[in-house]
Length: 242
Image 1 (tube, rainbow, N blue to C red):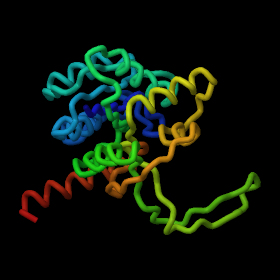
Image 2: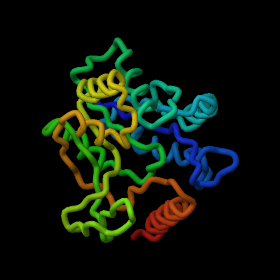
Image 3: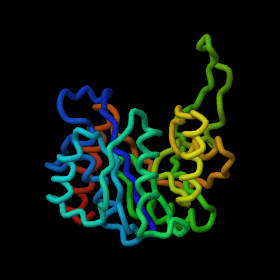
């Protein structure tokens, strides 16, 4: 069984929005989060979808799920104060389901504001977990990466050819990701940037798979306009048969 755990718990402060959180901003009359969820909904290897959401917006999200007839969404979970806590709540919610064999589950953890994911990358994640036990979606680093010191001087210029940008989904065998979240909670480790960092901290070897370079996270206003431009380009291609 393959379960998508979609994290939509952020408030989007860098988007400078005064009303809706960024995941509910609309493009072509559809919220960003729904654009994202629909990719997983329509993938034939995804069985269930769990969504972690800001508590105050759960009712609104429930209405959207009904409106867009997203049948695979099994549960909406209130988020935590950090991304790590929110993902842990989603993992624990899956653990509480008594109708599934946890040993047979692959969980794909994805940002709700990464709507440019595609079916091919989801498939590659599932296949990588089956073969290697993990899948971290990455994209090539297309600019120079530098390392600085505390005085803001350059310490090192990294070889761009061996650098990658971590993206999502980040996918694992369920019992593995559950155990590391359990350990982190017990040990008070609560500042991990993402699931890859958490798994690496606890000694797991992580296998990378290449995803589309446009699979960006909609964090700033410029990201939103990039998303709009890519969607418009895709729609125009369909119209003109390109």
